[in-house]
Each structure stands twice: as C-alpha cells, then as structure tokens.
Image (cartoon, rainbow, N blue to C red; front, side, top):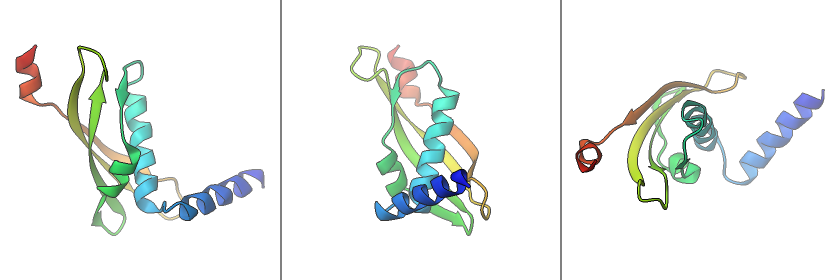
Length: 110
C-alpha cells in the first residue's frame, strides 16, 4: 500500500512540474549512465535530455545528449550519447540502448 502511495505521489509530482514520458525517459537514461560509468566523474543535463526526446514509435523514446567528463579539470572532454527507452504499460520504463559516441577529435588531442 505504501509503495502505491509513493508511486502515485511521484506521478503527481512529475506531472505537476511538466514531467511526463520525456522526463521519465531522461531519468531512466541518467540512471543507466550512472550505472555504466560508476566511479567516473561526469555531468549530464536531464532537462536538456528530456527536451531533446523524440518519439521513435508508440512506446519508444530516443534521446541524444551531451556528457562532460572531468568537468573543470585539465582532462575535461565532451562527447554525446544515445539512449532509447521503452515504455510498457504499468512497468518501469526500460533502457534498451545506451551508446556513447566517441569523437576521433578527442582521441587525436591526447
């Protein structure tokens, strides 16, 4: 019962602040990136991710965003990544693709 109340409260908060599927997809992608890059320093902008979300089909959103590694350090560099999130009924959205797009320009600098 408590979990249902918490889930309902989260849904209300998301809808009240302009959330929705785009914001939920951005949060899922952010969690997947954090899991994949555990121990690394990086910065994402979930709002920009949500704003750039595009519907690929009725139940899949595609997001493309920038990520900054080692922000503020001499080793700072940026790249982009692609993330696709599938929505299935009442289930939690699932990340079905997480792809980092490495730039050869960054490789040549080192």
